Amino acid sequence: MSELKSAPSAQTWTHRWTFVLAAAGSAIGLGNLWKFPYMTGMNGGGAFVITYLFCIVIVGVPIMMAEAALGRHGRHSPINSMRELARGSDASRAWGLVGWMGALSGFLILSFYSVIAGWGIAYTVDMASGVFQGMTVEQVGASFDALTASPVKVTIWHTVFMVLTGLVIARGIHKGLENSVRVMMPALFVLLLLLLGYSIVESGHFMEGVHFLFAFNPEDLSWDAVLSALGHSFFTLSLGMGAIMAYGAYMPKKASIARTVGSVVVLDTAIALIAGLAIFPLVFANGMEPDAGPGLLFVTLTSAFANLPGGMLFGSLFFLLVCLAALSSSISMVEPVVAWMTERFNVGRTGATTAYCAVVWLFGMGSVLSFNEWSGEEYQVFGMTFFEVVDFITANITLPLGGLLIAVFAGWVIKRSYIYKELNLSNAQFNLWRALCRVIAPACVLVIFFANLLG
Image (cartoon, rainbow, N blue to C red; front, side, top):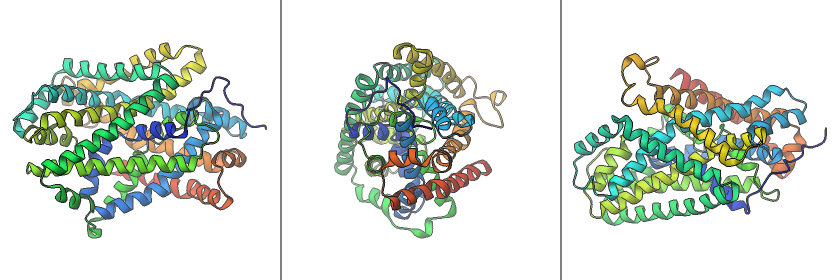
């Protein structure tokens, strides 16, 4: 069978680096600003970082290369690309469900991600207006509890974030996606460097933060820590939900997928580590604990800014950074489905974006109410709130399963000539990638899958 034809309307990024910025934006989110630095400090410091980077190479990079290659060869939305690629490879039509699984993951994640990002917008406004100035940890905690306990307030900020996401997507690939990542990603990096400089000058605990993140303690590297590194290496790159495949569809033919993916991985890891270097000295400066999880952003760190010189300004910049990181991730969750809707129903991007974002917003109301009206036991399933159920399903089932199937399809099912041409590697490099994609990456994802399900 001849190679698949590209969609006539397919557009491409104007430069390889636009894909790098877009894919990095998809990968860089709330987790980079608190989860990865926290995991590093609690799991062996430098030993954990080395383990994580090794896992990135053997799991994250080969699957990300596969997603980008499948997207570029298909030149359609992930849903239609998987269907057409399966048809072109004389494989079962059931492989088309992989695209739908990715779309489902993006839908579910965005429904609660938007709620958390909305808190970030609220905190940006409150920090800039001086609401937290001089507050104690207890007072900041009470303020956070008051925000989440108000369904009206949380709904407002959830709505604002979804509208911002929709506005970017509706403007199209060049005016919307390209222009947004070209502004947001450099702005995110500049804000992070400003915050790092502030932390070095004002905290007085910068070297303590460096030691927390990079002290080489292999004795702290437990099996659970290795599993954490393996799991985060997969999830940090936004794999398994179609975002990279959708962005790959707009990738110029001459761009090297291997070099491009390498650039994304370097940016993603660098920003996570710089965030840790900026955040933890501020936490230590106020005698606080660094293992506060989600509370690190909205309680611990807010309290630190509230009691440091210039904290109001730099706290505002920090939460603006959080919002930019969240927005760059959210647009990557919407794009795959909007691209499919424009192909399937022949509708404009504005109409498709409006309809899809409205449905995500409505489903997200379940997460809004999970923190207040639906927080009681009578609304819980297996002891979990609506928010926790959706989070569990995506993190433990749909994302790893989607990534596993993409690796298997790219390594075993698709015609070798299709993937070989897209990756444009030497025979030795291609064989190494194929071995990783066929055996190593799927085995590692299965470990993540079962380890998470079995606790």
